[in-house]
Image (cartoon, helix red, strand yellow):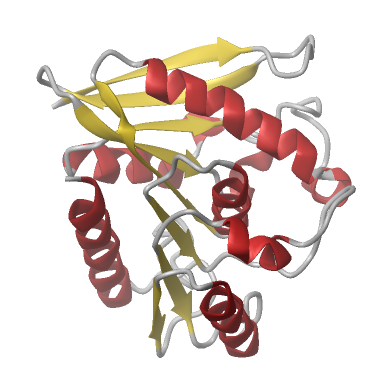
Length: 242
């Protein structure tokens, strides 16, 4: 059992607040805390309307973690086309969003602020990498088929070039049939972490493409690879945070 609530925070003085979903296990804690970066399909729907996002929160809290999921597309009106949000996306805005959500996470009475991690799927896999580069307090980071890590959005440099700022071990989950990130991209991400001296382990799955954990999309969902990769991610967090 667990509790789930929605809270709103202001970011950089924006009139439209950012929604954050907060999942907490029952019990006194303190529990480790995980920042979950949203995947792209909910960019126009909102957090509560995306079954996959709720399932991620369910899985994280069932494993004994508190988690927060910030709605990082609050910068645009909800009806704005997702292609516009993707084109206008800015990394500095995203870092501000993650900082605000991190304060919420660490401010929870049940959370141990010295045991936090960040993870994300798809677009969120890129955001989790970006977030780890800008927050020295994370003890673990998981990127699950995060694409566009080699690209910058807005001013600044691509997250791959900030690998030496990642303060923690990394787990990567990828499908070998994916084209974004492609196996070549994964090789380059691996090389960047190696060159930066960041402890990491990548798991690559045959017969799986982009979004293979997303059960909402039956065409790309791969239940066997999903089960194995989720078990590896949770074991990774357990090793470093519990």
